[in-house]
Image 1 (cartoon, rainbow, N blue to C red):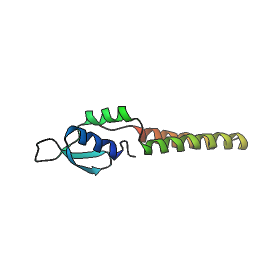
Image 2 (image 1 turned 60 degrees about the vertical axis):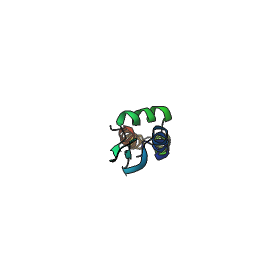
Image 3 (image 1 turned 180 degrees about the vertical axis):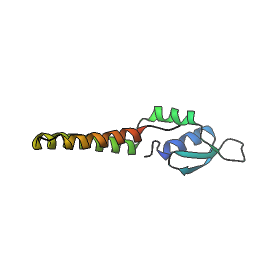
Length: 105
């Protein structure tokens, strides 16, 4: 899951003089600092600031929406079937989604 929009990081790089943003893999960004000859990872503190300013990314919003929809569907189906299993499955999906929403630094 992408915790940052690439455009957010690119805007930060443009505003702070970092050049040639490179996305190594999901949520791992490298760029050339001002007057540097080797790229460096974007500092985790900066990524935290970007995250706090911008909020949830589109991927995170999508996953949260899916989790909420599945919970409501599980609740309705569980009530209609008089069985707790749909709600248990929805809870399991919600737990996995919540774990993926954690930002690793």
